[in-house]
Length: 286
Image (cartoon, rainbow, N blue to C red; front, side, top):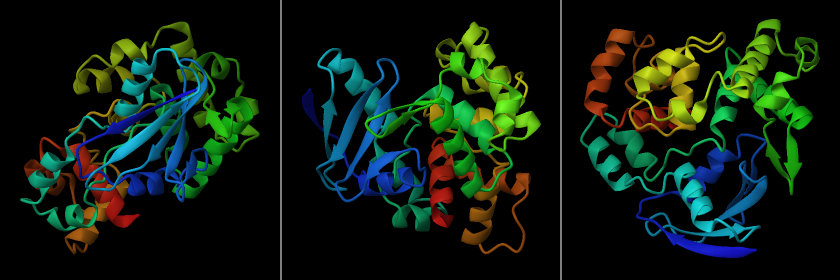
């Protein structure tokens, strides 16, 4: 076992990160100790990320179970927590826009990626058209039934495992018929190599959306979720998302939810950081 200390530019509010991660019962978060245990899928080990700095002077200690390929693992964790992104520039950009109030309130809130890109797609499919509480409940049932656990940390089932499941098995967990078919279908495509997420991740946002939405059960919302929380693309604004619509309605005191045309007009000033606009709007109503 070994440890590495990392310092990153501020602002970066790790306590808000832990708060948001703790919403998902599958995450092993200890907010008092300021740490989260992260499943590292390539080797099946657990990496612990502990905050030891402040919002203005962020610092972290990473604890690794195995001493090999530490640089590769460190790069992976830095990508998940988006430590390479200068939030100071993002903050300065939005303080000159009409989103200034929520960026002042939630200063230093980063985009944090899901721990595995394939899991992003599976989770997004499960969450489709469900209220948030039951979406997390259903995902928890699925992962704890078919995934693996180590030191209190849950790993989503592999594409190969999902490909062996039946619709009836998932129906027992309260999946709908179609949702069960969609999850199994995407598992089959990744397991067979028909869908190569690593190769797809090198493409543009537009190409990725085009390719993913060819797959049964994956619409624009799920494809955009993959781009934002699977790959960390910085300029995503899912206009069909009800949460974003409600947040805009609340922030600007609108009587009705904004139309697509109104959202396009408003969001023009938020480019090229639309993903952060999305995140902070979500945060404003959580």
